[in-house]
Length: 422
Image (cartoon, rainbow, N blue to C red; front, side, top):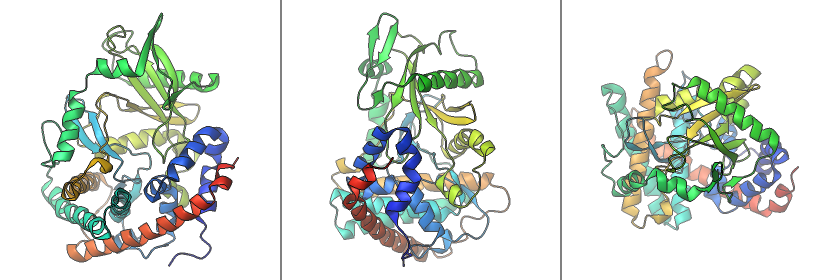
């Protein structure tokens, strides 16, 4: 049962106070998005999930208990943190694409979070309790069936233009992403001026104060210095830099979009690089580890290393940059980036196939992490009886989803006070 002293509102306010003080307007956007429903609220409160797991707010499954050797985890894994992107070999992949909260722990930490997100996302669609429950079971069973194959046989698993998933909804998104042309993408996001292109200001791109713009340019120089020699001398020539609004959980972190010349501005073959502030994961903050100045300065490098290890293939522009003790993850904002919106999937059986693909991808990332972990790590130890394991994960997902709904209701009821935080 939940601790009677637990207050999700106080927890949210304490965690988000630095962000509210830095960018009050972005903080209010975050609150508004989280107020839309239990699933967006869940996406914006990884820190609450991390603390609840540590403090055993919901009866934990054995794989959540803080015992045994740990292995790499995605951390904030949920159904919206999958998407398409172009890999270095030119293929368009569908994979996990957000590792802001990458950490180490027991695999159940990730699986329970994914299972809870699937249930909440399904209920947000209006699916029945039976359908939402079956969706979770389908995903967990796909995970428990896939992980042993990946661990014992070293079998790779990738979803891309050259390796379809056999799930029409996922494969259609991959196909759609592969058909987008860079020139069309850049043309829609930019406008031409006398000195080059400029990102069109919108709900997603905004002007930066001089201090933050200067930091964005320093970060670009640091990033470029770590990269291989570019194809042309003016490849990293800056044409514009602005702030970016995206997501829910990471909103409030410093986030810059830098438009560079790339392979030709006149032909709209520019490159947009995103620099996102890297911060210690909430799971480590609450475990009082990896929060010193050195860890903060090295955090982005650690996150990118976790992403390279977990993904089947990576975008060629993935990297990191450091400025005055702060570190930033760097990725391309590219024409091939698409996320699959569960609300657009009309067929419940198709939704189950999507969930199975996502679960298999998570299993692959865990298998790859286990092979690189220090010491003897056996992610299969908790799965001697897959059916019992699936039941435990399901029970956690149902119980924690109910807790999330209660927290969200309280959040909405106190929204005015929450928005007034400063």
